[in-house]
Image 1 (tube, one colour):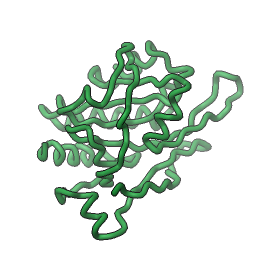
Image 2 (cartoon, one colour; image 1 turned 180 degrees about the vertical axis):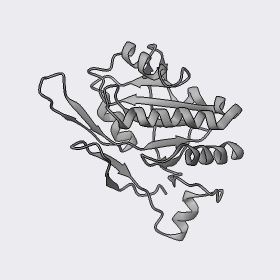
Image 3 (cartoon, one colour; image 1 turned 180 degrees about the horizontal axis):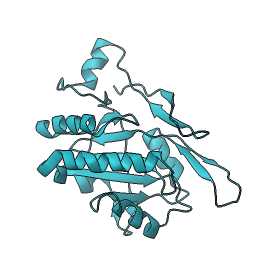
Image 4 (cartoon, helix red, strand yellow; image 1 turned 30 degrees about the vertical axis):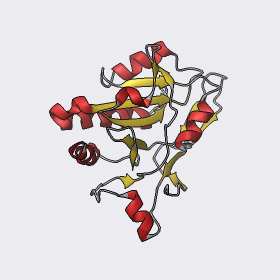
Length: 211
């Protein structure tokens, strides 16, 4: 049985932009056991059993089609954002670069996926330059505009275009948390925006120790 997935507002200091966080709860002892079959002590929110990214198939910054199967054997962290995001996205990517550093040699078993919610402006070339500025091993994925809603629905994430002063100066509201998948491609954790690198690295080490 999958955990219920309610959505809550995610208060940040980004002015008029809203970023939706999702928290997950196990409401009964039987469901609690389903959420944590190995009784692992996570600091993030345990979402074991949720059916996310089963059919993920998107092109990366180099035009190669990627699926979750490509990253089997690695911990995968998925974040949704866009290259013109003024604060939340670069902060989150910088945090993940620090997580990789904290993992030391185990950092090679971490794969960060940045999925754009702004495919109209985020070309493959732009995504390539953007993601490389944080870590050359990180991967950016670009849904086609017609694919974006399906991908967002699959991950239960929120996004919305906010008009600007010109047709191309809009911003994007979007969910700001991270999904963490284990080495078998199963979603295990939701990490809220603002979670520090040491906390995320600790949870990843727990997952790696169980692999």
